[in-house]
Amino acid sequence: GSVIVEIDETFPDFKRLLGAHKWSEFLIDPRDEAKFVSKMYYCTYNSDRVVQKNGWKRIDVQDKWFKSKA
Image (cartoon, rainbow, N blue to C red; front, top):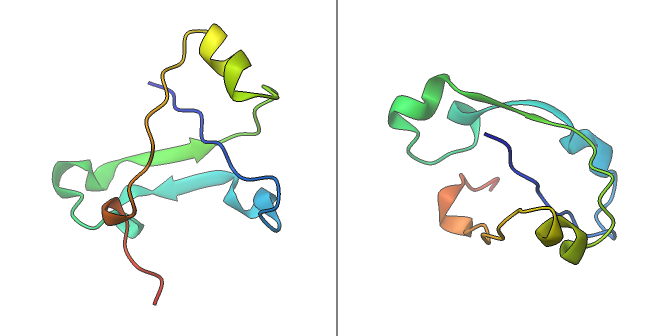
């Protein structure tokens, strides 16, 4: 499956988010998902509405899903 992630335009250096990300390195309890890798690419949709018109459903990310950087 595919996921579109919206990044605030004020986020500094968003390009560092692009590329491969191992689930075991950022999820708190990956269990069976530890073997997965997500790949992030730049998306040319310019608004949330355009994304929805193309059949995508919005699901907000929860902080509790991720390891703390502290």
